[in-house]
Image: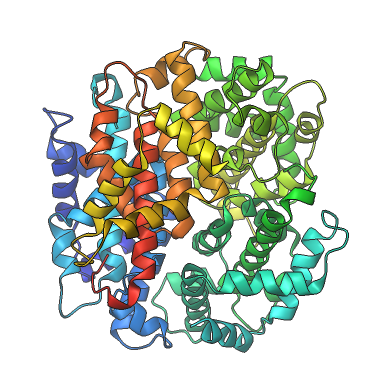
Length: 160
Length: 160
Length: 160
Length: 160
């Protein structure tokens, strides 16, 4: 199912490479010798988790169905316009972020606000509905960053 | 939007009356003089919350779309069969439960396991997809029970 | 740190054996051939996680300090009497439960309500403060049960 | 209990005024005419909630006890050094953030990362243990910002 999740992300313009760039950006100041390979490995481990795959597949399905006008109203309009008080996208994202403990939530909130890299591009698309997609990317990147932090703990000196 | 949420629940066989019976069942031993009116009021307050409305509308839309075979695979089959490791329905439900603090989560887990009243009927339907519906009902009932517990705190003697 | 967490649990009357009995009880109907060894292994994997160790050490410290009257008021009385609206114990417990996805939350709520085995004994202690302890036990058992469910997924037929 | 929570915050150098400045900073770009009075009112509503009061009292007690070397090891050292993988402070904070739905979590993560205003001062203290304090401030500010967003929804145009 991991491959299917990756495939469905790619169909929405989300590549593992773009997520890896965000992870690298998040962690580089904490881990000076950080390599891109480590970021790819961490993302790979995150995508291995069943709960993450389920969140990705469910969220992207909602984006696609909203885009195709197949959702009932008023949820269709709410998702299409990413209505400011709609928080179900964050809820799904937090389920992803939580798999390596709550420390990932900090990065998630930061990414969601700063809209770094791909997250910003997804968020500002005028053509596609990316209400869930941008949060999913931020969540996968945050979880991967948390995994790297866990692994490199001994050499880590930062406070969160 | 509250009316629309109630209407869409009714279209899926979920009435406020049935939820009230579950709330009464949950709280009667803690609050001997509890009246059904109090349960209705608590449910009403829960349904007033935007986050609850969003969770209801999103969850029921997923049930309906799964039923109509409009979701992409493999998420369609996962939701249709309520696959045992699929946890996104619980995630949405916990978002509802949380609105009166985490004490509601205990009742939610209990209801989800014991499948009291309407929850059991939804869960065992052979015709309809109620993967999200049963958890939504359990969550609304738990949140309403938590609200009653908050309100009647002074006379409450139970330990959680 | 895992050994220290186990040791501090034992000092509060919590043994891995008692937790394993609860896990067995939770999962036996879903996995007919379930062996106690599988329950022990699952608990072991749960206790390996950093977030779980932190939650155990923090929660038990609060119980002990409340018992020794070292906490400031009013939190001291709130924790000593396990005040019905105090939900921080559940919050810590849910952090444990979440490590294998949200499906563990159902078992947690059920255990917290039914107070099976050790959980009931901890909860009814007249001598010790177990406000956090009983929820921690319920949470470890639920997380271990979720892990077993994940591992035995292919043979699992239950709906949650 | 609200007054006690405010008092115990003040004893740790946390004033409602400082929190209001952070809320103003968070929301000013979304609500051009935002006044400080609105920020104070929102914080007041947040502090009214029982779950928030419990989280404040519990978190600050842990900071104080760590400072006074009254916690057992190893949790004492973990909290005193705000060990990078310790996430219980975030867990308590998220319980606060959640009271107005999950949209608050974005601001929380952002504040926790950017350490704006008082949050940065608490975090960099060389004398006091503020492991829980800085997250509590970020969480109260985020919840208050979420409340303002809910109230001013109709005029709000931002995407989250």
